Length: 343
Ligand SMILES: Nc1ncnc2c1ncn2[C@@H]1O[C@H](COP(=O)(O)OP(=O)(O)OP(=O)(O)O)[C@@H](O)[C@H]1O
Ligand SMILES: [Mg+2]
Image 1 (cartoon, rainbow, N blue to C red):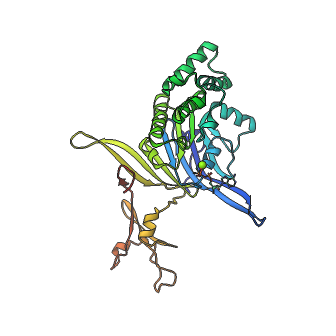
Image 2 (spheres, helix red, strand yellow):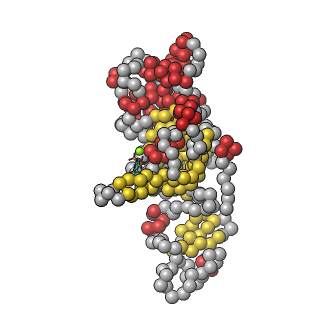
Image 3 (cartoon, rainbow, N blue to C red):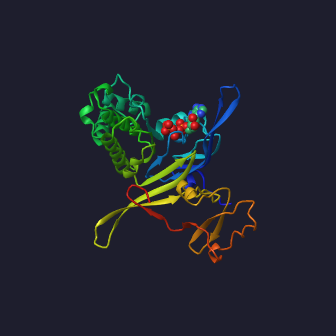
């Protein structure tokens, strides 16, 4: 079995291996029921990356973020953030971790800012908690610098109720990065905003990531976030399933081309999730046959258990069979997708 390098030696700023979170709830009949919010999630984010995790409601996004911010503890698995092991941290270390190592931006604008303080005072309060920089003048300069970076200097003397939702979220980002965290975590930071304002806030997160190099993870249900980040990870049923990487290339005429490439996530022990449309198209269920080709793996629908002849050995190439069944081709190469991430 392949073993992942864990802890600070992994070089990652966020590392989740087989992360599991089970909630125990009492059902209406009074009996205990388990809800598996995370079911063996794997995720690695390197220093300086800007990554979006996208998933439907209930897929486990907020559960993941609560664990990464050390507000909640996983049931099993491995979780390291900013060089700290979240499973073994003591309560005192958790407080220090939240003060110094991570910053947060939440969906509800009201959760990010104190309503009776102005934008400047909200940022100054965050600085006061960390105790840096020393001295009132240095602190004032840092407040101005942060509000400028987020393009909300015009809101400096306004309270949250006197700002638009987008302005409040940009001030919230300034508060989130005031402690110069290694990692910035955002849970649906644009959930309460319209499309244009959302795009503005996501661009603000991108410039913070680019200019300060802070490792940034955004979780959201909104697929349009993929236009603002280089890497998008899909979360389904508490597991990461596919990733889309975006890059810019020059075509043969020297013009810039934006390319989005979709990958399936393979975990430590080689498991991967087939996309729903593949499963449906070939009616894959129960079992499939696999064949190792020089540069890819072929996946064929398996026979049902009551079929007459026994299954072929896993290493046999079904291509050699007289009548090849329909196949899913999991090439070592990637599937190139359109700009919107679809094939
Ligand atoms: N404290 C809790 N107790 C019991 N079940 C919970 C708890 N928190 C979350 N869950 C369940 O875990 C699953 C994942 O929830 P989570 O809040 O992480 O989803 P999400 O992806 O953030 O959804 P949304 O997009 O609606 O915010 C859901 O089925 C949810 O009902
Ligand atoms: Mg949520």
